[in-house]
Structures are given as structure tokens and as C-alpha cells.
Image (cartoon, rainbow, N blue to C red; front, side, top):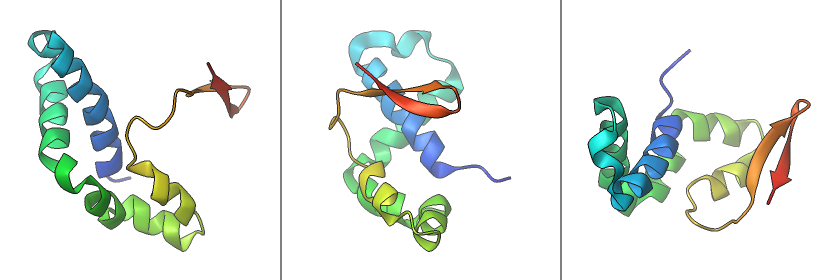
Amino acid sequence: MRPALEDQLGAGAILSALSALGYRSVMSREASSAADLFDAVRPCLDRVMRDCVGARELEVMGFGSDVEVAHLLDVSRVVPLAAEGAFLAAW
């Protein structure tokens, strides 16, 4: 097991958006730090995501297309819903 930068940045992206809506004052220190990390990395998010261990592992396993879309922001209106062991598109 290892800390996953991609997970921290994913949470940070959501928390950064909530912060912009005025919710920073009710965030835990950990949540606020995740938002800060995302905000700091956002200008070079593509490079950071491609260089993280998880992305390199996915590339080796043949999931390079997943890495290609992992850093994209605000490109889908679909929310994945976990149901019966699979992800479904929820509108």
C-alpha cells in the first residue's frame, strides 16, 4: 500500500471547487490541505498526473487511455455510480 497522489489530487479538485463556493471555513485541515495541493499543482496537472506512480503502473498494464483522461476537468456531466460490482452512468 502507498499513498496515492492521484487520489489526493482528485479529492483536492472537488474540495477546491467547494472552497471557491465558500465552504473553506467548514473544511477540516486535511480537506483544506488537499484543496491547496490541487490549486498549487493545477497549472501543471497533466505532467504531475502522468508522472505519478499510479499512472506509470496503468501505462504498463495497458491502460494508457485511462491516464489520458485522468487529468481532464469539467469534461463530463455523467457521474459514475457503483452498483452490483460495476460502474454505471448516472445522470
